[in-house]
Length: 150
Image (cartoon, rainbow, N blue to C red; front, side, top):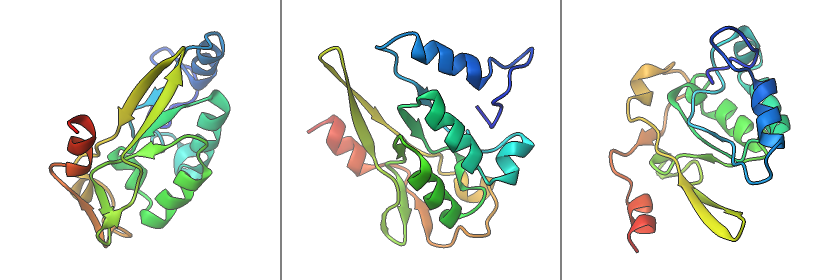
C-alpha cells in the first residue's frame, strides 16, 4: 500500500478495499508490507494512522516490509501493538530474539489457512539506519522451515 490510503487514478484506496472486505465474510485481507510509508499522513504519524486505518478496514494479517522499520525499532513495536492484526516477520531478530510473530493461522469456512512473513535482508541497508541497532534479518529462517516441514 505504501501509505496510499486515498483513491486516485492508479490506486484503489483503502475505502474501496474496506468495502470489498466487508462485502464477503470469507475474505481475508492481507498486506505484503511497506504499508506505513509513502504519503505525508504515513510519515507525519510514523505509520500509526495507517495502522489505525488498516484496523478499521479489517486487515487480517500483514508482513513487515522494509519501510515498517523506517522510524526505528521502538516505533515499529508501537505500531505492532496498535495493530488489531498480526505483523509477521519470521526472520526478524532483535537483540538475538524474535521481534515479530513468525506465522499465524486464520480459520475460514472450516479451513485453516496459514500465513508467514519474511522481511527482506536488505532492510538494514534500505531504511534509515538510526534506531536499527540490534536488528538482524536472517537469510534463512529455521523457525519457518520447521513449521512448513515438521
